[in-house]
Structures are given as structure tokens and as C-alpha cells.
Image (cartoon, rainbow, N blue to C red):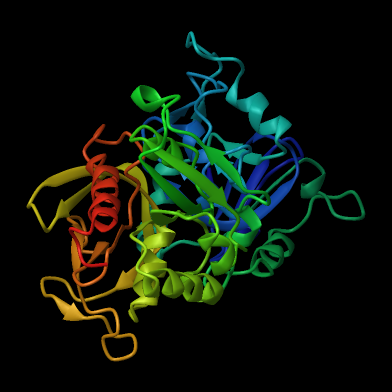
Amino acid sequence: MNQYDSEAVMFDPQDAVLVLEDGQVYVGEPYGAIGTTSGEIVFATGMTGYQETLTDPSYDRQIVVQTFPHIGDTGINGEDPESSRIWVAGYVVRDPSPNVSNWRATGSLDDDLESNHIVGISHIDTRKLVRHLRSAGVMRAAIFSGDALLGGDGKLRTIDSMLDEVKATPQMKGMSLYDEVSTKEAYTIEPCGEFEGKEPLFTVAAVDLGIKSMTPHRMAERGCRVHVVPSTITFDELQSLNPDGVFFSNGPGDPEQADPEVNLLRQVLDAGYPFFGICFGNQLLGRALGFGTYKLKFGHRGINQPVKDMTTGKIEITAHNHGFAVDAPIGETVDAPFENGKYGKVFVSHIDLNDNVVEGLQCVDIPAFSVQYHPEAAAGPHDAAYLFDRFVDLMRSVKEGTRNA
């Protein structure tokens, strides 16, 4: 159910109510925890992988709408999370599965949401909601259920009072969140697979801005020892790890509010370390090179985005989760704007074929590159895995002196 006229909306204490910043209201059933939550409402287009979505730190402070109607049929397990907890602020689905049917399942999604205190709503027209967000753009929203639907007098609240709560929620643009999701203590991922128990080929310092657990694992599979470090690390502390390369992860929030990380990255580039960035890390490389960033109307979130590698012409099916993008010229090699071309030439290496958004940067004169999407995910399923090989090759070439650092 949904209504445009808030005065005509009917609901009772057993319902859940979703209120958008522009006044749209959806009445459905509670899903997960009971209570209230607010944040930026976004949509994810993946048909599978809801557990990875929920535990991706890049969704911090966001209410996620699943476009696929049936969610929860495979339950949850202890192997698929991308971090130690669920990060979404709220969850919106159409038809949650009443049954769990998968040999790997250890519990239901509903119970997992409830135990993690994630307030959700189900049985609304998510197709209509997503069409609206594609047209109007993502915005602030809130979900209310249980006592959150009642005022101090015990009577049902007005939609206007809920709308006031929505409009008091901070906007994503201008918000700094990477410190909030970063690890507080450094930890190390040792080489695995065929390299398990062997001396690492390379050492990587991975700055955690909201890192997904599969990312350092992909490097470890290639013989790397990965030191995952907090976002608060200093350059001197980073240097003390004697890394062969430096990695900046994905993460939530506005890249314009990440000046400390941009300054750290410039020190990394000045020292000649091979650099690889993913998602938020791509935006920070863009800023370090002197380009601007901007907020997308509704962003890219899903596992079915076609991206073109401009260096090879190859088309990849890729996983995305970003609401901001780098503003850089496509189709030409230019001087990086920062300090009159201090970092030499750079070009856009990848573009999204749906909307021509910049999806990667490649430096020509320094050993640095980045992509906006998630090569650690299995969207293609392995279309983008070569990027980790490219990082390893870059570290090798710099270490062996076959590339000018």
C-alpha cells in the first residue's frame, strides 16, 4: 500500500510505516526488529547476495530497498558476511520468505535482522517505490513500527510528526562516516590457497575505510600478506609496515569530507608506493589527483552493472555500491589537476555503460590506479578479478625496477 496524501493514510499499531522525505508514505508489515530507524533510502538490484549487502559497511546510515521481490529463502550463514555485523540502517522488502531452504543456512534472515536490531518493513510495492526513487532521486526516509507509531498520549502519531523526524535526519552529502566503520585495531591476513604457509610475495597496507572481508582475501590468494589498518593510521605508521603496495578500500559517506585520507594518499603517492583503490578509494584517488566528486541521483547498487575497460575494450559485469562519483574527462589523457600536474598524466580507465559514469582511473607517470566497483565480488562471476592481478604486477614491476616509480 502507498499513499501520496498523508492525511488519507490509514494504519494501525500492528503495521509498519515507511515515510519518505517528499511525503510519500508506504504502509506494510514489520520485518526484523520493531522500532524506528532513519537514513538515506537507496535500492539494490541484486537477485542474490542479500547477506553480503546487509553486512557491507558502505551501507552505513542507509535504508536499503531490495528490488528483487523474494528475499530470505536461503536464510543466513556464517560464511557469507562481508564484515562482523549488519551495517544497513533499515531494510525494505516485498515478500520475505516464510521458509529457509539451503544446506548452508544456520538461521533465518528475519531472526538475524531482529537480533541485530535492524528495523524493516515488508509487503509494500517495492517496484513502485524504486521507480519513484529513480525518478525523484534517493532521499531521506524513516521506518516506524510498534511503539514508534504511538505518541506520548498512546494514540497513533500523525504522518506529519513522522515526516518531521525524517527531515531531521542528516543528509548523506556532507557526511563523514569512514572512521565510524573502520577497524579500531590493525590485523593481518596471511597468504592462503596455494601460497598458504609460504613467505609472502608482497606486503600490502590496506587502509580500512569500510573494507569488505573478501578484499584482503583476494590479495592473500595471490600470495600477499595484507595488513588491514585503521583509517586513523599516520603515514609514518604506514611506512613502518614496509609495504610493497598500499590499498584504500570502499566505504560510506561523502568523499568531499575525507581530507585527512586524501592527504594520507598524497603522501603515499609522493613516496612512490604502488597504489590500488576500490570504490571510496577510487574517489579519494580522484580527489588526490585534483578532480572533484559529485553525488549521483540514485547511485549504482547491485551486481549487474556493465562496465567497459577502456584499456582493453573488454566488457565486465560488475558489482557496485556507490552514491558518489569522480568528475573526470572521459576519452582523453590529461594532466592531473593537483599542483599543476604534479602527479603527471591520468586517464579514465573504466566507464559504466548504463550512464557513462567514471568507474576507474589509471595514472600514467606514477604507479597508481583505482576502480569504482567491486572486483572482490563474484558478479561476472570473475570478470573483474584481473584487477588484483594488475595490482600484484604493479608491485612486482616497481619492486624489480622495471617500472619507474
